[in-house]
Structure formats: structure tokens, C-alpha cells
Image (tube, rainbow, N blue to C red; front, side, top):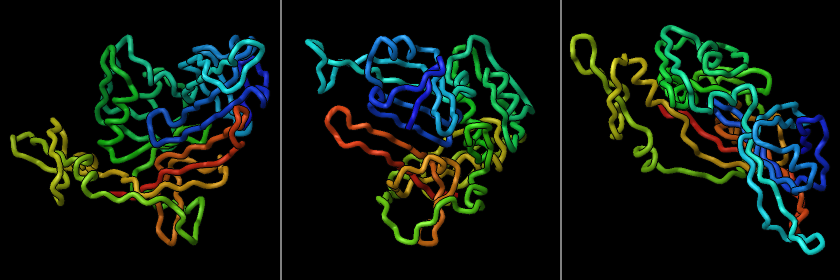
Length: 297
């Protein structure tokens, strides 16, 4: 994995200790974490607010946190070598992760217009109307976007150029980006945790009558004011993590796509593409890891 600094300089391979590119079904759909050896050049280039780019895919990120650490196995002269721990958000969407100075209130708007009003500069593919959206002063827009996505039973992902809205059911209608004939994954199965973490919802209609979402299973129950039956059902619809797959480095396989394992389709909830240089005594590694799920209605 090769990183390009804000000045256009390619970060030398011996200075990059590790990097991990995360892709998620989240309002900020990509993040980057890296550990870089601290030198005069990297300290001046890697600062909060500056950009950093992944060379091969062209993804651009905005640095939001720098942490300096002196924990290293290497010593230069009499000094222990330091490292910079970098956290960066997908640049076109990074503004929606900051608290708002002013409120954003919209009704009958699209997801794209909501992103724009909250400061993001990204094209929304397959845009979708949102009945109501409210992010008050001091609140974080990404939290509120996540809520309306839950109400609409959808998610968003990115290919690095635009953000796509997709309904959870439609994820599984896609052709698989990867097919595995043999299951080599780590399996996760807990109906107990599912019942605790995926609630049912109810509301009241204009006449004061109770309306309900999915109550087919015994779950925690939450009240959602001014919500119709369609949204109540959507809010219980969720992707449940079932498998973890570790593979060769596959940077083009990201969240929002489908992997088919032994004829069963799984949605990629999170993808992590990692590089470890081994400069501090370990082995050099380049791999991808996927958290896979199925749809729970």
C-alpha cells in the first residue's frame, strides 16, 4: 500500500510501518489508519486537517487525529525512534462527522441534499427521498444520517468516487464479486445477542391507535413517534454478522458488495485492507479481512 502526502510526495516505504483501509456501510463510508515513522518530513506533512491519498485506488482522506508514540523496537543514536499514529476520514464526507455549529432541518429532501447541507461534497448515486431529517446545533450529522438510513431500511457505500444508497434487500440481488466453493471463514452465530441488539418498534397513528413493526420474535421494544408501519418494519430489518473471512489482499472488494460462500450469499458489512511492513521485527504482511452478514427481516 502506497500513501501520497498532501504535498504530492510519495511516502517512502521504509517510513510506513502499517496501514489499514476500512470500508463500511456507514455515513462516512471509508476510513484510513496508518502508523508512520516520525521524521522531520513526516511530522511536518502529517498534521490534523491535511489530506493523504491512497495511491493505487486514488482515495483521498482528511486527517482528523495524530498521536505520537515512542514505543518502538528501534533506536537511532541514543534516542528511541518515534511513530505517528494517523486516523483519517474519507475526504468528500468528512464534514458530516463533525458537530454542527448550526442546525439542519429538512422535510421531503433527498439524501444528497442532506449531505450537502451538512457540509459533505460527494455525489449520491441512486439518491433517495427522506421524509424528515433533523440535526440540531451541537449534534453530529453522521448519527442522524444513520437513523434515517435505518428508517428507510437501507445503507450507503462508496467506490471512492460517489456514494450509493441501496436497500438492504437489494444488496443480495447483486452478482457476487467473489465466489468461494469452500468455507474457510470464522463463523459467528448467536440468536441470544441478536434478540438483545435488534429491537422491535411501535408508534401511534393519527387516531391514537398503536401500530407495530416486526413482532415475530421476542425482542427489546422501542417507541418511535410519528412513524408509519413501513418504517417500523424497516427499523427492525438489519444485517446480522455471521462470518469473518481473511484473504489475500483484495483492495477492490469493499463494503456493499456480495461474497458467495458454498452457494450462500453474504453482504460485506466491513472490509479492511491491511499492510504491515515488519520494519520493527515482525513479518511483512499484506492481506484483506471481511466481516460478512445476512439479512434479518
